Length: 266
Image 1 (cartoon, one colour):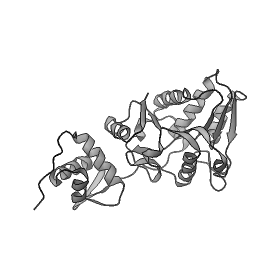
Image 2: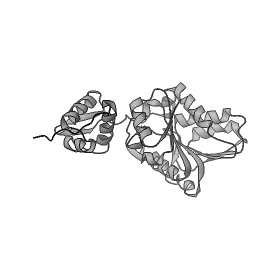
Image 3: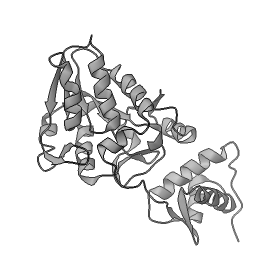
Image 4: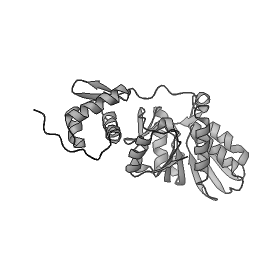
């Protein structure tokens, strides 16, 4: 016989379901009984929540529990991704660029959102003495008009044509000797389980970037919020701030904020 349900009064269903989705996303298979124990609620409630999440395509129901749903699709070429949520990415770029002060050092990850940060840094004509390190060839070219106000340093490595990014082998050597003021990190997913990315070679370099920065800012448009991609980059305990757009899911943002991340929606 099923144990008497524990009280889950006061916990909104959307918040509880976001937690369930995050837990299921961490493993290959999660039992209903384990979810009920973790959440302090009844198995009847968990089954109902799993059915609702499965109906949205956020996980897959199987006998006795659930498995993660499909992760984000294949990696898009840089030029194809550039037009997606362009206005939102521009606002994110401007908000991130506004965090940089004269004389600081910045590590700018590859990606279309971080490219918007590069363009916003160039537009800040009053900004001087800033050194920007990047592994993105397109980003370096975007920054070039601001030289000599900005010093642009391209991290070496092996070229990935899809994103015009530089990765291992040799991509991480410079990062081992750097400690920058701020990292602006791109990604394919941000959820309560952490920050994730689609591409494995870039994921390894992103992990090294996280170790090289005093302040770590994740820049992600709203479509990335609540998503879980293939490769884990870090837990939310390694993120100081998330800058995202108004299209982001409110429930997912609440869960991220409750995990201790400063969330800014622009």
